[in-house]
Image 1 (cartoon, rainbow, N blue to C red):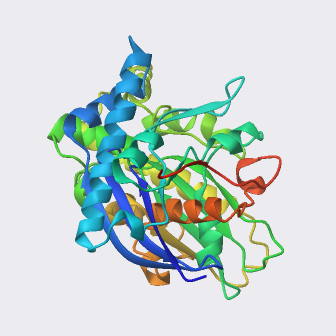
Image 2: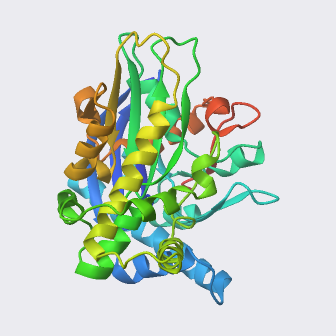
Length: 381
């Protein structure tokens, strides 16, 4: 069987645009990326998604409408990517569409996760089979439903020459530990907020989509008492497997921390200092999580490879290097995949895995009872 083309799509926890990756995958699961596209979400849809991340009125109707609108936007992005590459629907085996998470509650009883982006609508509008709902089966088997990326990281990044840690800094940050020995388990979990709180704060005060290069944060000084208050959140003390989302680390979460800080008698903190504190929170919780991974012999060497939007935040990555001075820090481009496209490639690969009955083993990552084929298949016809 020759290589097949798949498209992977997600918007991630930063919630500003769709990332689409067009890939070739052969019968052994080896991936060759052909092209990628960043497709902006309409501002009205961005706002609808933001609103659905927190409790509000008439949620079911708003969810149903946003579910369809998000799927229509995915279909537009797919058509654009196909036209760009002079391809038709018949050239694509399947689309792997993650959707946009608006609620993720692995600790609820029973646990659940909700994503926008109706796969039936995507299939109807593109004429291509769609694999979606990737997290639900893992949760049904007792897992966290996240992170899923370690399955791909192990497939394409694990080597015998070094211990690798893939640090994905999107709206939420997560890590994957890839031991040099295949006899050791792969470990992966969400460490806490990545860009989500920093994005919110710079949008609120400077009306920028994000803090370019971390320049605004770098202009401030982190507030150590506020940082300590934030770090006291129970999520940071919880042991893996664990996962979280932007619906936990919300603007309301930040405002509550600021209110508690003020009620404790703290001097008001300047906005740029709060931004610096949020950057420090991301850097410390990420590097603390890496430090907690056992490394008794320090052989072979340990390296960190960064992907996601946070890979472009120079102030953040420099701070991480300072906190972990004996560890090499590079982006995933150094090992073959551009940092902006790793997660889109993930969902293309998960669509391939579903179509071919491959069950990624995430038992040591999510806590699921067993390996399972992930996703639900919506045929093109």
